[in-house]
Length: 103
Image (cartoon, rainbow, N blue to C red; front, top):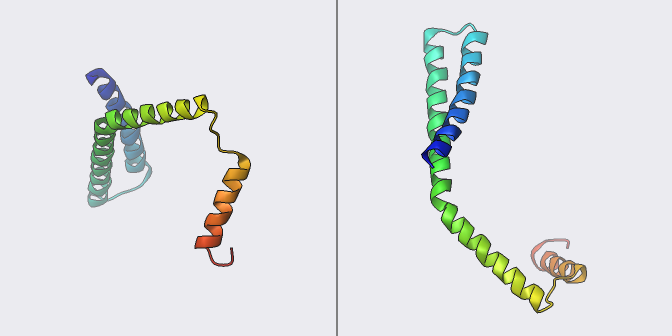
């Protein structure tokens, strides 16, 4: 797992550092502006890492929901329960009539 995370981080850092380097070299920036570009990159890396960590923490829950949905779909198929295009049309039309002006 650590190798997978490390690989992900290396790819992420590589791209962000490439963009930062391009910005630093492409523009004639003052020392303060260079520090600003670097700080923005650090913040972006921290945010991206935080998001990836949160998604990784929630992966188990997401898989459990997916398994639950697959189970419910299988049950509906086994009982020959389907949503037809007419059912969907009626549902959407009723929703629009009830909740939208001019519907």
